[in-house]
Amino acid sequence: MTAGASTAERLRQFLREMSPAARAMLLREFERGTISGENFPGFELILDELRQLQRGEEVKSAPQTRIEGLDRRLFQPLVPFLVDEESAEKMRGRIARSSLANIWTWVQRDLMPDEIRMRADKLSAAVSQENADEAHKLTTEFQNRFVAEVEKVLKENTSDRKTRQKLVSQLGGENVLDDLLDVIAILKIREALAALSQRMPPQIKNLADNDLQAVRSLFEHPAVHRPSVFPYALALLFSRLAFPPQILRLAVAAAETDSAPRIAETSYAFAVDLVVDEIARQAARLPVCLRARATAEVCNSIKKFHDYSRALTTELDVSVDTRWTKRLAQLRTEVAGLLRSKIDGLPGQVRRMLRPRKKEEIASGSGLDQHEVNDIENALEILGACRLNAGEIALNEITLRLSSELETCLDNATQALLESIRQASDSDRPFRQSQLDAAVRFSAKVFGKRYAELLSKAADVAIQGERRAAQG
Image (cartoon, rainbow, N blue to C red):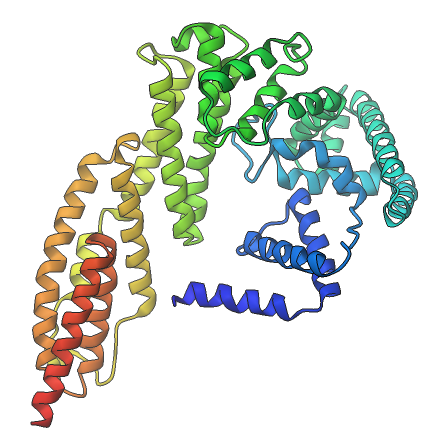
């Protein structure tokens, strides 16, 4: 079991050992966090485990009532439109989770503090009494009241620069104000969106044939095609697709052409904007994840960047330059430069780490720095992701060259290391063993797990042979 898996299992065991009441309370807080923007490494793992354990408890006994907070009820219609990261450019229908926490703080502190406490108490009582109709009524009333109060504040505080800046400061940033405008727009049309949501499958695995025709019919309905509703309806569909870039098929079918310039002239251009925005989000995530050494997230973003970019260039005819193709070209250049800086020196790093040392160069009982080994192993995994997705990030040539150099480097180094371990003494054996262990880990990333397993067995044979020779 890997160190990461061991940590996850220990966390699961800790949650299992908590009392049901404590788990239920913790689950409520985590579910509120999904709305208010809470996020940290392991957040999703803990939330998933808590939900599984809660379901198990509900099987054994009567379901426990979860008292949803007023903020969760208020923001519930926004869930399909939430994204984890802020974007450099505000996209209509895409709201940063972190903005909701700022908005709710502002509502409690400045907008309607007394009313919040009163309504929260009423809602808590209704939910505790399992009065779903009353809870729904209270939620609807509060949403309407919230919209009216915010629209009043926006009208009074955006007329001049000074009052607008004061509102921005209270909210916590210009981007939060932009998201607040989306929040109000969505809450005002929440009934139309709810009706559309009910007529759409919870998830659309493949937007083609009958499913495509059914969705197209929904979007041609006058109630959906209103300017105030249509962009949000597309964003809702985007959240329902197993592979979101398939929304481009709707744009092509509706415009009856795959020509990007002609689609740009229709209302369905927003569907393409959504895809390009997601490509930009993945590009923006990469440097953040690289700094956090979150290798799995880096590889996931590389794959998504590739898949969304490929879909854009295959579903649409992009032979003529548009704002979308120009933006995609810019993003490809940025991503390629970022990833190149991460992987370009890998062969040299591996070569230096695995080069056989003379006995005099090795301190007795020492070993390789495991942090450096981990960094190289992570970089090799990123190289693998770059190679698999090189076509859309303009790294074909460099990934092929680096992979070839690494294969040669590892092949030569492992042979020399196997020979050195056979002749090792007690003082230098730990260091040579650590080099072989690193070589096995690196080989798993470059050649595959099967090759690494064979190398590991060869190392065991060499070590056992050396021990038998010493004993004989």
